[in-house]
Amino acid sequence: MSFSKKTSLFNIANILSFIRIFLAIPLAYSVDKICFESSINDIYFFLGICFLIALTDMLDGYAARAFNVVTNLGKTLDPIADKICVFVLFIYLTINFPNYFLFYFVLLFLRDLIIIISTIYFAKKSNKYFSANNHGKWFLFFISLAMILFIITIPNILSYNLLIIFRNSFYFLSLGFFTLSSIQYFQNIASNLRD
Image (tube, rainbow, N blue to C red):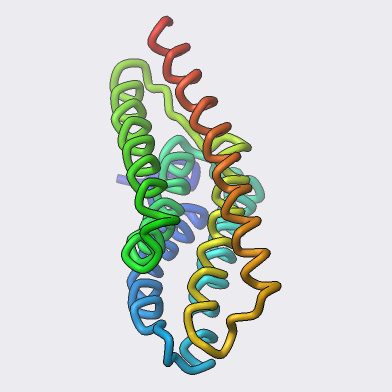
């Protein structure tokens, strides 16, 4: 049985998303090594994994469009890969910074659970798939920067006031975009329920 590159599970864009999913393993390992006494090498390793994750995230969308392999599976796989990596960091930060991340984690988990259930429902019912919205992309951008800065300021070698100001600014920007993206997702779900 042959598959065209457009419908294949293993087109270049999907492979990049799968690589990002597998990068969650070294991400979890690298973030688990970060503590107050961590060396600069531990931080470089963590940042290197984050760079690879960001690179595969940028390249998968570009590859899908450049090679004309945009698929419903790819539109679903890309945000799943993002969410897996984000949840790795969220779990770590919820443990280490519960005042900042515990409630945020619960809200994100519940929202994404509703989105996943809705995506499965509408995919089976009417072959409709939800993809990331622009507010969701901005949320992911700002929360990723905030989480990276929270993590690299844990060791005593990088606790600069300017980093902490940026960290907190990105955190609050992410909350705003989380709210906007959630509203947009729920409006989309409600609109599809009415159809």
